[in-house]
Amino acid sequence: MNLLSRSEEIVLAAIWKLAGDAYGVTIRERVSADTGMPWTFGAVYKPLKQLNHKGFVEKIPGPSSPERGGRSKFYYQLTPDGRTALKDIRRIHRAVWSEDMEKSFR
Image 1: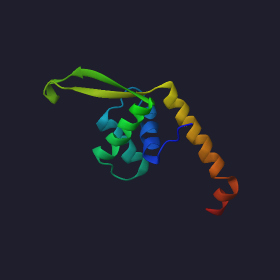
Image 2: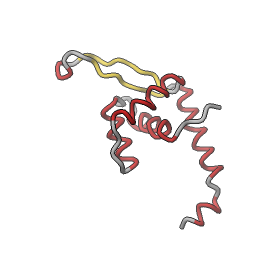
Image 3: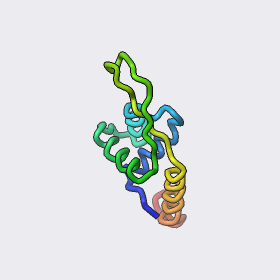
Image 4: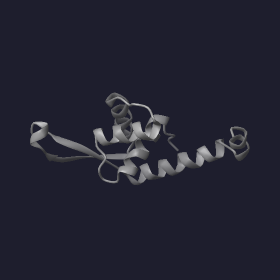
């Protein structure tokens, strides 16, 4: 099993939540909203590159647009391995954060 870093986990979850509309700007907005902290583009693109390298996301070019000077956006979507990685990390969190530990934080 290839464990996710925390930033990879957050970015991967954002891509899943964005369901087909995941590109740099929307991912950054989603992770900033989810964490309650502003994320830089660098903080988003580094884990995106790692996730792509690990085979957890697929990078798909979109159509070019005049607003972007003819350049296209790149969209990201989870691969089956990416979905498995999210399920695995959730299972690990549950195992690490036992019910007794959760109660002590209340």
